[in-house]
Image (cartoon, rainbow, N blue to C red):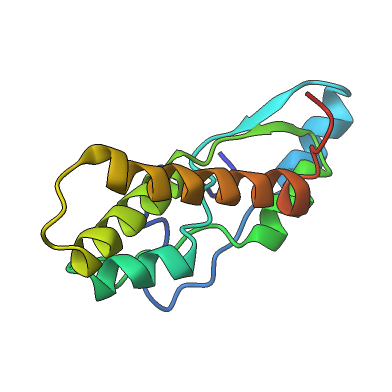
Length: 137
């Protein structure tokens, strides 16, 4: 482990997020080309946390891995970065906001479309801007 953990509460409030890039460098040195997977690497995107909290949620201390650190890890030995919590936060935030704005709606076709769009946009951002894997599939 280099400092990641599963979930949306990776660091205590006031703690500075840190990853052990020295460990990744050592892996690259000792095992050139060895594929490393970074588990628990969600950024816990602040806009989604804010949207959740503004629409009935309670996640005031949710802190993730800054995107700059993920970008750095992607340039090193890391070939796969798992961001499941970001997916869940995008969907949850969007659905919470949808129901707040449309309290009488109940049709999943109405609230799941914006949630899917939020996930699609977030993943597209991660692929092109953060992880540097656009066009590498």
